[in-house]
Image 1 (cartoon, rainbow, N blue to C red):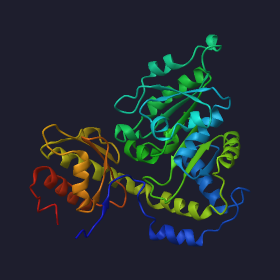
Image 2 (cartoon, rainbow, N blue to C red):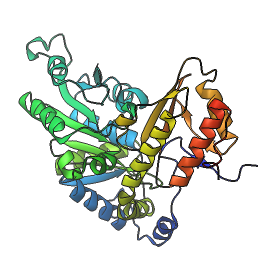
Image 3 (tube, rainbow, N blue to C red):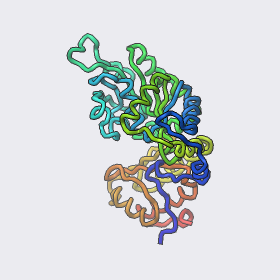
Image 4 (tube, one colour):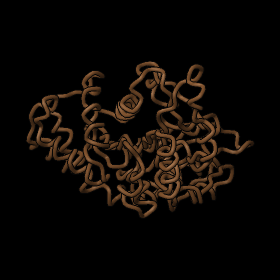
Length: 359
């Protein structure tokens, strides 16, 4: 019988802490659509301060936050946004920028570290002389940390370069900062400096920060004023939303400091997986809390089968393909959980139990 559950599918699976539940129960609330909820205002003020922007807006999800941001910057249907071909907005958000907003995506290749070559961004910007044929480029989107690249972090220097390019061509820059706090901790750079070049940023509260629901988008006051209207249009305007914002405030106070431990546990996991015959991971590339590992040819096990075996031991993870697995560490995964996971993976792959790690 399974006596423990270790959920490594994503950092979105965290449960509210007791402190969060208490804060939610005691939250002072009002109607947020009417801009009266005091706890929502407190969270938004704090996030604007942290990111160095004029204003902020709570939204139900990161997908909605990115969609609103793109639509505010690309007000005219048929506008074009340059973004990475391996970015969350392009792959995992149901094509919302085009199906709902009429915005045309212009994907360019992401490098392994999540960046996009500056010259490729430059060449993707449409020539205004041919507007009669082309959609008009209005926006560039980056993602930091970059999930599909294994949680790799975009440097200040790189982001500043993209920001300078955007300004040169009269474009806006949006950062999908779902895990921007992870990038900040890993790089040792304050969040406000990482996003200084951006016109808008979306920050997820329910991933590494561990809040139960929501994201915040930040930008200028005029940007947020327009974003608030779009939030209502999309059905994201809620009433006593301070109940959710109270948990997010606790997350900011208590969980940002735990991200470094998450990163350390992810590195330990990656290094341990590399020692298991038949598996491979580039441990040096593990910068934050996401680990991808490959099952080598000849191991006679698929990612799906490995997942099924581990689930019998209470370990949940997410196959990325038939031979590739994604694991995400969060604050409710301990160092002991990591060692137990390594033991179970080794047993599943080699058939040999690690008695030291399975206690």
